[in-house]
Length: 306
View 1: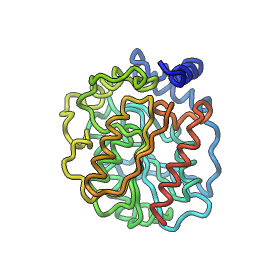
View 2 (view 1 turned 135 degrees about the vertical axis):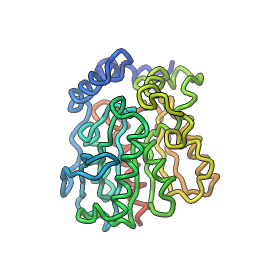
View 3 (view 1 turned 135 degrees about the horizontal axis):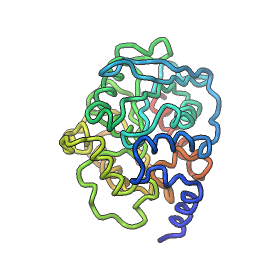
View 4 (view 1 turned 180 degrees about the vertical axis):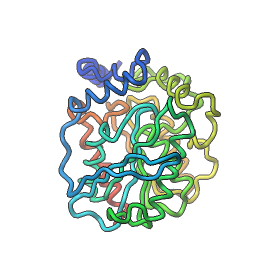
């Protein structure tokens, strides 16, 4: 085990964050633990000009959403952001600092979306909600908040990156950019052997197996709506920025998706953050790379609107 991996696991254990996603916890206990830990793991983000909670139409009722409009916002530029959490945890609050920092640094307005979660709402509920929100935004539902339907991007981390990648495939020619942060791109071969240093400390193969069970609930894991990596034709999808973490079992599939996009003629930037675990963009008090990584991603997002 490397010194970097030792140091990461040490601060994860000391902070108690590694236990948040223990497979011994119930889903509700995981949600409660994440809520309690939020202020312990994130520093306050830079201010934005306007922050407002709203609702947007989902596939089966209204969904909570949060608008972040930065100072000096790029006219019309808007990002729909879907939070991570294995399709089972995560809220607008758990990703508040990340989304606000993205908006403040990029100059792009962000709309964070709280889609329905498993196991109460298994696949394809989250996918259907994401599609409904994008359809509404493309129809002008966010125009009062400065979002131009012709200048929309999609983004998300982990499970949210899965949703964003699928949306980018569905809405070819209608999106400016896709921002994928250590995205979970396929749910089939979760038992593939990986090096010890790539296992955890937050996301493990064992937890991926639990995600498959809780989210898919028996549905076909090879369905491209669940596993966008399996889409055969990637031509014409929006330009992409893919951020990956070294200590993450998803690193290989993130790199593979980047390579497939490039082979299909899609402009793509792949950025690997060394000595960083899955989920580190939510840990600005603990992970030294967190803020630089968010700022790097935010600048890539801003560049899409130049």
